[in-house]
Image (cartoon, rainbow, N blue to C red; front, side, top):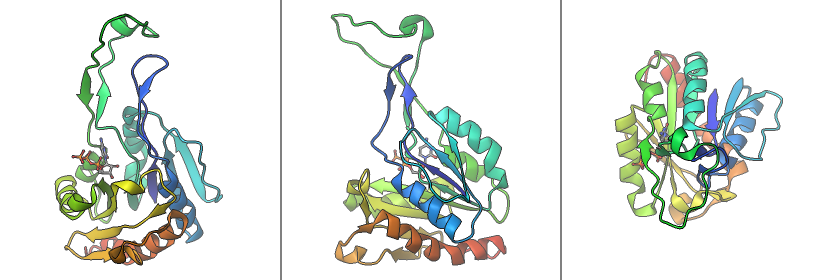
Length: 224
Ligand code: CTP
């Protein structure tokens, strides 16, 4: 199982970056839980302090979307399951080395940063997938748009499952979520329909047992 977790840091100059508030908690807990269930796990981990603790987890660090893209190119084809829990930047500064030259200096005038779109990594992985691989993405969205967005992401990115969770669960210890399958089936985490959350450390056990039957069926070429 290949799991990505954490934010990306996209450099502005040698010392500054654009990032996001992802803590990496869900992906790191998931890596530990999957290893405890017997999976051989590779965790591609963004710039966060948190670490996986299970000895069955091999961790490789990334910083930028480009770093992660290179790691996926190397590791994705070997995995049976790919879980993209990382909060990958959608845009990155278009860094002009001549202009920024190391560290950008203060000037008493407004500064405009030009951003360029990043590649959609999970869509790329899905486009080059081998038969039997399961690809699971995440959708972190405002609550009222969550179902529609999860469905749109599943279709647009060619995923097998999307874990939908509301915006407030980012950088939190707790989560409520659902798993949307390709066939339209939705399974809610315990209590989620009543608005109850659970610790991310427990949620990951629920997530693994919930997605495992679909993974087995996809690996057997039966789909879900
Ligand atoms: N993702 C990715 N590469 C990117 C951006 C996102 O692989 N450059 C993955 C995330 O890891 C996640 C899924 O795509 O599994 C959904 O991420 P999200 O940021 O919600 O989707 P976007 O495609 O960025 O859609 P939007 O910004 O329109 O919500």
